[in-house]
Length: 213
Image 1: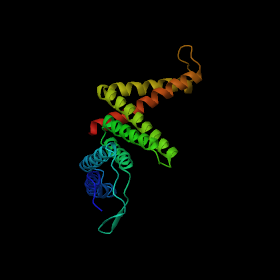
Image 2: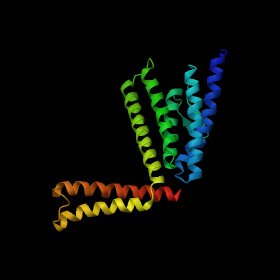
Image 3: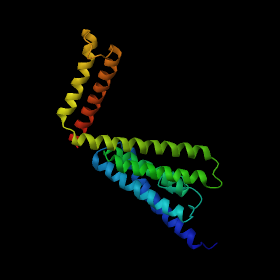
């Protein structure tokens, strides 16, 4: 039976995805999380996701049957599902590199494709796709928050972090010594002190992490 142009196009795209995915999967499973390896992983999974999403938007379907590559048999995923998974992995690599805004964009793209899967006719695991969409949106939101904190701490001198931490100790010590600050109760002083300590510790952690990059 003669193949249509769409079938030939789908087969070509699928072969490209498989070849990139083998290298990307090998990098991921190697356990190497050095910046160089993570950048390569991000590039590979982003390339897979973009090809797969384009194919899905064109209405293409991967050819049927298993793929044998050496001793490995690979699954032929729906193009949109492959895009969703690959965007999520690119997001993971970006987050490990400290590129939180980039990670958020990848997770949002993953969520977009899971939403598309949920709305496609014939998809039996509708609820599962919606759960995955919600998860990816949650990760994207978390990355946006981390990006904001990271950006703020880059402008915040370390002295300010130490000062916040000291304020926390001051408020907590008032309860230990029995000296209440102003008209505050011990419980109020404890809450404020604990909040300052947490902010100081978290701020110190991210400040040191940013300096190491």
